[in-house]
Image 1 (cartoon, rainbow, N blue to C red):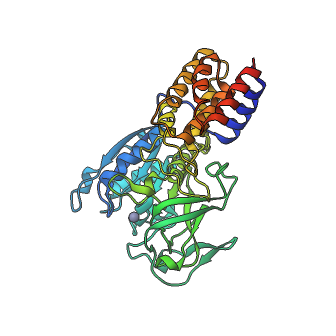
Image 2: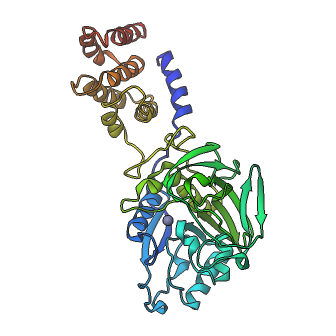
Amino acid sequence: MKKQYFLLIALALLVSLFNGCKKETGFKTLIITGQNNHDWQASSPLLKTILEESGLFTCEIMTTPEKGGDMTTFDPDFSKYKLVVIDYNGDSWSDKTNTSFTDFVKSGGGVVIYHAANNSFPAWKEYNEMTGLGGWGDRSEKDGPYIYYRRDSMIVDNSPGRGGNHGKRREFLVRTRIADHPITKGLPARWIHGNDELYSELRGPAKNMQILATAFADSAAGGGTMRDEPMLMTITYGNGRIFHTAMGHADKDGGPAMQCAGFIVTLQRGAEWAVTGNVTQKVPFDFPTAAGVVLRPDYTDLTFEEALENISNYDVGKSTKNLVCIQHHITELAGDEKGLLETEKAIVGVLTNDKTTIEAKKLLLKELSWMGSDYSVSAIKDLVSNSELKDEAEFALARLQSSK
Ligand code: ZN
């Protein structure tokens, strides 16, 4: 094996922490929806997509009766599921359903509370203990304190006032507060979330609750508290574990709040933790940082073929996400000569396409200089006559010849 190839492997392993292989079957998951002041017809199928994309969950969406409908007909058998995701903000459920949901959580069931689900059921004591914090629904000091961070301290604030607020939608910085929790382990200390509502002034019983991440609600965006508001929380209730994300306001196609790789990945990790108490998923290479938002318009990780197609438009200053994906793919094929040759052929195909940008060709020449074989040589020789690519092409040829 070429010496340089080891360097590539080391580099790619450092940079690209990908999701592993997808499992065939997953934890049985129930997504409850049907009433919301949000577009639940958009959000619930996307929650299903996001969770199933992890390979860990098999999801079923159940809708309640419409507003004003007969809630006694809504009576899920929670015992069939490992995880219940609440994408619901509407009429109270029946006492029987409330009791069976509470029993499900007490006996160890996992729960995800998503965005406006923390507005739900202001009068249901057990539910509010499961969510930890909530907003709207006439919540006030009677429901519990405000909880937030000021600098590095968590503040429990019993002052009177409304529960729940948000300013204008915007991108905002999320700050990890507990870095060694299974959900947050390996995530950047700070990352920028896609355009979303920043929920503030949440209040509630906050028992057995940990705040994993906060976001600063600046007043410049209107309605800001100038506090670091809880964004990601965990709560335990009986033997059950609850993951609560205040983020993810849905547009028709999910929009930037749901497409944000930070939202997607924390949801997947939080859901796994809620079921097992652990997280086995790797932090993907495209998790956002403080440098900027990362959106996944189709909610999935890139494939090699997509990354190669995308990279053909590469220009200086654009994201190198596609390149990292290609490098990861090559690393995974270490030792598989046939697979590597197929990959090399695909790269040469893009390299020799007239529509591929010069900057993309430079990147691909660099890749071929590490991983290429005799197959690439004639295509690279043809590029030496191109004044914009001469240096990179000669460099690649020299590398390929010296590694023989
Ligand atoms: Zn919202």
